[in-house]
Length: 246
Length: 325
Ligand SMILES: Cc1cc2nc3c(=O)[nH]c(=O)nc-3n(C[C@H](O)[C@H](O)[C@H](O)COP(=O)(O)OP(=O)(O)OC[C@H]3O[C@@H](n4cnc5c(N)ncnc54)[C@H](O)[C@@H]3O)c2cc1C
Figure 1: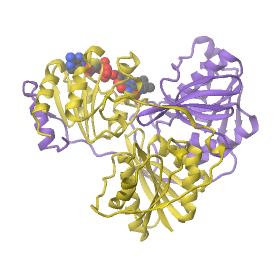
Figure 2: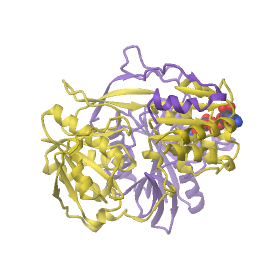
Figure 3: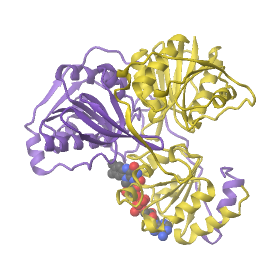
Figure 4: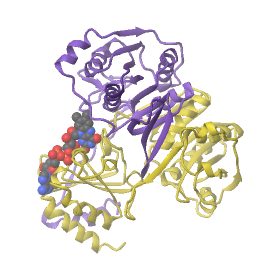
């Protein structure tokens, strides 16, 4: 089985988010980048499937050279090889076009990625890739197993419940907890990752369809109003009469 | 041209999140000097469809195909794309739910449109068409220009007020689309809805009571559940709580769980780690109950009680019981 796992390079979950002085761009200063946490569920599930059934796991990132440490990390966790499409990921449509172009050349059995990226929170790329390739996309899935060599069984979350879906290969799926338990690379993994193939390809020509023009931060809260625990019931009165939310 | 709103239903009714999308769509239509049409799919009764007039929708296209009662992305997209072409829709609006996100992304490819999801405000239409969206897990906003001819907007739940023009009704037009078996290739074999015990579903809830590791064990969850019941709230939890199987995974909110933005979020025994806040920071009012005055959650709170949950919460339940409802 040939599995493609798409990863994005995002600010660590504890990062303070700042913008350049003109508020036109994200300020990378002092920011630590990690593999998007949702993508790690896809990556580990892909590796588990490979370990159980054989095959290969290829990691794909659309990004500039500074994403390579995290691509190497994915290789250290257990992917076999990697492809970096050498381009700034302008928007979801641009990224989806790049992934679809790589997929068209390689006939993957499944294409997995996280349910969303924690920087732009778009939840768009997986469905766009499915649409561009004309194959089903199952989003967001939290369980993925093979029924036989040609059919996968997934469970996906819907508001207030879940759906069980069986699809023929190939397909696209996005992942979320508890699809797998993300792994920490071990020493051997880190050593072998250095020599695993990481291929750089140039992007296919395509237009982005959106343009980020300005950033801002939410207004700061006015500060907390503390209520005496002895009189805890007073809180309920305040929520009704002052905050007007009850 | 027109504005087209995709409306989702559940058990015969239109979801509140879709009423928000309808309100958004008709306000955009007004700004652009055109009308707003809704395309409705799924299990929705006629009375609910007609009531969309209250949100400013003039016409509803309803596809009553039985096979569409459950969500199947490819089939839904075909129906909506047909409606968009028929109505010459230049702006499409949906609620940014799991279903909406799937439909919106596929439509963006099929209609060659610009897509923004997680949108929190009405567009600016003088000059470029820009919308504001929530980014970096609620830590910032971005203004995004939608540069294609067709603009597709996924509205973040609970950020747009439902408008209500009481008594106005929308015209319902039957609408049918030719669907092939291939459109149902990824149809669910089985759909399992959560048993909320008659309570409220977390993603649609306006009030949420949430518990963390400070509650010590699942046997103490009656505190969370009883308070939720008195307030008509849904229940949620922090990540370690679902990791330890004290509560089911679908209750886990935060960076790696679900994102919610209710009117009121009550956090009990949760420290307020940055990854937890990422899932709840767009809540309108936040209440924190924690015995540690240094707990970081107090910095993000509107109201707080520094105290032992096991003493404080029973008092809240008593006070909530005394409220006239
Ligand atoms: C990549 C990543 C993703 C993550 N994603 C998420 C996520 O999606 N959601 C999430 O929640 N976390 C997430 N986390 C974990 C997060 O960092 C915290 O560890 C977690 O939120 C802590 O949960 P907690 O507040 O329940 O427990 P704790 O941090 O242990 O806090 C318990 C709190 O209870 C208080 N307490 C104890 N006893 C009492 C009492 N009797 N009465 C009142 N208060 C009491 C304590 O003072 C303390 O503040 C993530 C972490 C990482 C690294």
